Length: 330
Image (cartoon, rainbow, N blue to C red; front, side, top):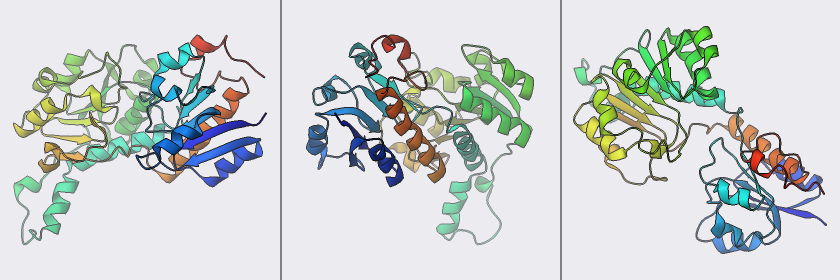
């Protein structure tokens, strides 16, 4: 019997054709909104696999997808998926790690530079026709090279970001992580610090943490109070890690010098006090939004589902240990 796969993201047609050539019936939604949600739900009835992002995959969705065997998000993070619920149903949860590390590290460095050198602020200064003579002091930024950067969350992305900091900008690298990472220490001279010490010493605090119950509001009033008044805060992990109200208060009162944010507590973010602050760079969760990376991630997600539906879940399966004995290879 032909297996069905539902895609709910704009991916290359060549990947859709790849699925069809492997004898899968494919239903492709470029995105899901109120106009097509009912149609999307109906398409899930016979779906064995689903691929996409920005849709909550939980018990409510499973009411429409009684035959689901595998779901692959086109991302590293999988907080939109109720992993425990999927595990209880024997459904493989897949993600796309290791294909976006360089893209994310480049982007994080771009945020560091944009905030520290006031790229957006001075661009607006020109667009407002204010450049009529010598620049005022509020257009002056601060250096990045040879400064201290503290990385909170030392995974694969953290390691390639540390490489850019050390080899590209001669920065002094420290990191906070539950486990010690000897490779980043040996290669880039990174120091493994407790969080409080890292916050007090760093000129740049760069967060790359997932959203979990343990990391929720890990950064709030206390943490921003610890940081240098000249410090710049970057969040490229997940929005709920930061208490946004506490961050806004710290920025307004100049407890820290600035922030660069790619993620937010609630997304999409259509209105926020952050938008009116001159010492903030905000962008709409674009850390991996390059054509090359999105294509690679999409291909990885499609391969994940093909593999899972053929009983091969060893690679990129978040809940492998919970469901490995439940996978049927026929």
